[in-house]
Length: 342
Image: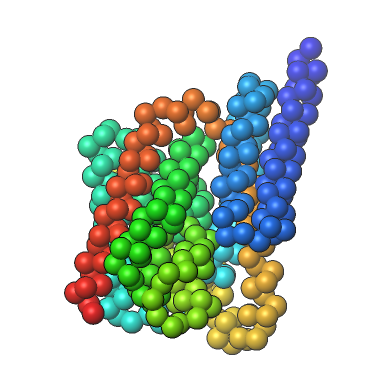
């Protein structure tokens, strides 16, 4: 009987892992096929995992079965993400005034979300993940910082859904409203999108789906400008990872994710400078699919481990309030800072 039970548990565990891989791969391929900025495979995989878990009830309550999945695929994603995005020569090429404004915007994100978390009694891990995802790079920042915090699947799910929901509101409501109301130029709109919007795909969408912008800069140049500003925010992870890890552990902490992130970033920077053609034309087209697929699988596993009841709890509502208020404060800070600079 004991042996039979063990065999059954091993079989269920393997099926659970295969299910996570299937869901993550499916939505990765879906995004590649559709090619839309709105079909973020990380978010879709997470939501699909949560939905499957909710529909099957206790069938997939083998949380330990999914541990090997995100313990393997998140570090793989971190490495290849840093090779592509933590390019120091590119990220530090912004003007000092614009870099200073980015730092201020990220700081306002963190301070606002932290203060609201303390005031509302939010779970600290959710506050930390929501702040990192809002201030830096959305789902990617949450994926990178979650191992450093030993975050539970429910914490990751709540934070990511709150950040993604707020980003949708910012993309389709807040930014178009401000752009039309103040007749923003294409350049200003691109700078604002890169400085404030949480998800990189939404930054691309923002400048590509706003036809009423004034100015004569082509859409392709606006996208390049917005993404270059967004890239400057990736540097915030160099501070966020050790800071949040230390706060979570109540002692100085330099987690392994920081060293993987920095090491891969230095490697990518070196390759881009020594072999620019190879880096741009051969390496980058391979690197991005690897980290997107890895994180999609990890997010599917996290969704399958999450408890749908936690998403409907007061923690979920508080995370939405934190993310939305943080975004509004960041928007106000950006335009105030831009007025001072220019």
